[in-house]
Amino acid sequence: MLNYLVFGIAIIIFATVIIISGKAISRGIEAKQNLKDKSEDEKKIISDTEQNPNISNSNSNLIDQINDLNKLKEQGVISDEEFKKAKEKILN
Image (cartoon, rainbow, N blue to C red):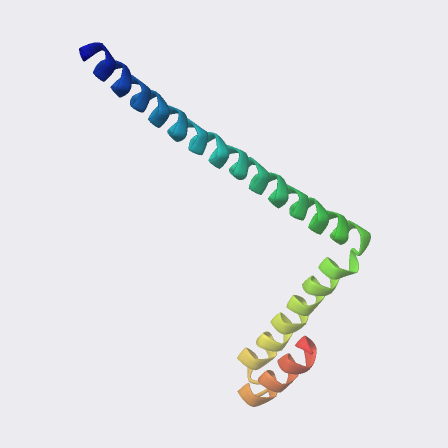
């Protein structure tokens, strides 16, 4: 009788260990898939940028134009309102 009790407890412990390890393995597989998806997205972004280098050039050009406008505003050549209008025109 005691043997059956010990055997039953051992089976319960064994089943618990199998369930916990199964969950850990499935989480690991899911995390690996998420990393793979992220790296594929990053590769796509990089390839898009390489195919169209005007994207990064246009962004730096916009930044330069806005910085130039900011300098003019700081020097008092244009007002805050004119700065906002010009910035909106550049961004659109």
